[in-house]
Image (cartoon, rainbow, N blue to C red; front, side, top):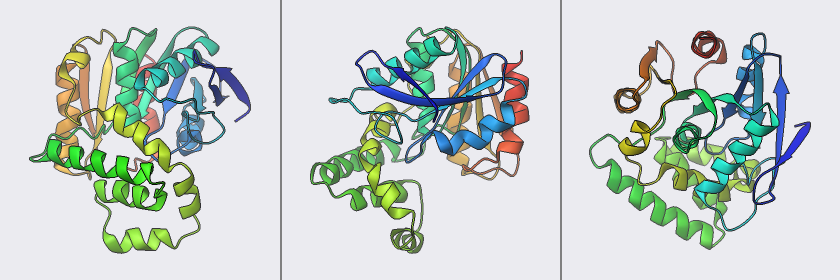
Amino acid sequence: MDKKTISADGTSLAYASRGEGPPVILVSGAMSTGDTVAPLAEALADRFTAVVYDRRGRGESGDTRPYAVEREVEDLAALIGAVGGEAALYGVSSGGALALRAAASGLPVRRIAVYEVPFAVYEGGAEERAEYTERLTSALEQDRRGDAVELFLRLTGLGEGLIQGARQSPMWPGMESIAPSLAYDDAVMGDGLVPEARLASITAPVLSLAGGASPEWMREAARIVADTAPRGTYRVLERQSHMVEPEVLAPVLTEFFGQ
């Protein structure tokens, strides 16, 4: 990241931009930094100023306590101010929930696209989210960062064998280093249910995307987001999973943000 801006509470935010044109800020999800969405930024850079940033508590950005979701909305306000005073937003997974919150808060957001925000629309989803929150909070309070990462990976549906393999991999120390930010994504997701009143207040166009190879409940959640937002559109990207390929996603976002 080669640029810095300061959020309302004094937190330093690291960001980078690629290309020229109307600004689009890319909001990463849990266990991710701005580098995670950098390939998508490169794919958008021929039409837009694509902005990636490290959310607070990860990468090169600071972290001022106590945390509140409102501080992350203020972070996006600072970034929007730094790139010209208005921007489109793209958020993936829980980053999509943050982008929707920012739009509903009244920030100058021109358009919003989100990919597979994991709202718990499946049976027992609310209970599962509540149990995850309780266990995650306990693990982080005891500084059991590895256990916190395991909890998150199980929530995503990763099998036990793959989780134990991840623990032995070179990437594990990096995952543990940003484990405290899992509490931030958990807070952004709220109770895990679709925030219908918040979505109904968004006046800008919303594009809600899902992958054709993802679980059916993720597509259902994406559809409900689009149906609830007054100017929402739902679209499925065939043969894509939660790890959507930038070369497939970029043309869809280019069309939407270019309108």
